[in-house]
Structure formats: C-alpha cells, structure tokens
Length: 142
Image (cartoon, rainbow, N blue to C red; front, side, top):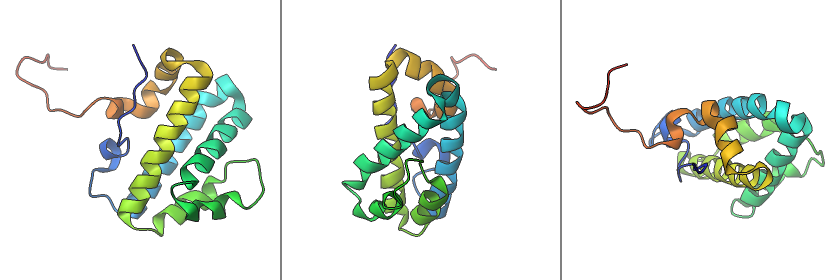
C-alpha cells in the first residue's frame, strides 16, 4: 500500500470552484488535523518544521509566500498564512494549498515512509486520497 495523495487534495474538501476564503478555511482545518495526527509521532516542533519546509518549497513557485517566512521564526505561522491565502484569487489559493499539501505529504513520506504516512494521515485526508465516485449498485450499502 503506498501513501498517495491526489494532485488536487483540496478538491474533495472544497470543490473545484471554491473561493479563496473557502480554501483558506479548509487549509486551516487540514492543518489542525495534520498537527493532531503527527504531533504525538514527530512532536509539535517536527510538525512545524515540516510546515516551514513545505512553505519554503512552495514559495519558490509563489514568491508572495516569502512574507510569511520573513518573520524569522522557526514556528509555522498559520495565523498569518491562511488569511494571506484568502486575499489571493481562488485559483492561486488552490494552487498554493494543493502545492503545500502535496509537498508536506512528500516530505513526511521521506521522513517516516509511505506506509506509516498513510496510516497516520488516513483520518486527515479522509476520502480525499481516493477519487470521489458515487456508489454503484454493486457497492454494499453502509
């Protein structure tokens, strides 16, 4: 079993036509889930370090993110990032959010391996890690 994240991880949570504000809210919720799931394993500082590194890597494609990093703190500053994300176009917010999540996921897989990543993030990603398809007549009913 490999730990795969879709190329557009936010699409399941907010839909393809979400506003920048909706993307920012979804990212804040996802980050809370990531922090809760990973802090017992890598510690709060480890989660912050993964967030900071992901932000740094994504900022290479989105230079305006440097404003979040320039504060000189080693702590991932979500109180600044998510509102800043909401100030951009919905397309830019979704690109940054998806880039951040994909990068974070890749870094975590490199750190702890794909299998453990999948187990730890199963509840955070929910069914976002699987394509959303309506049940078929052959699917068992819950």
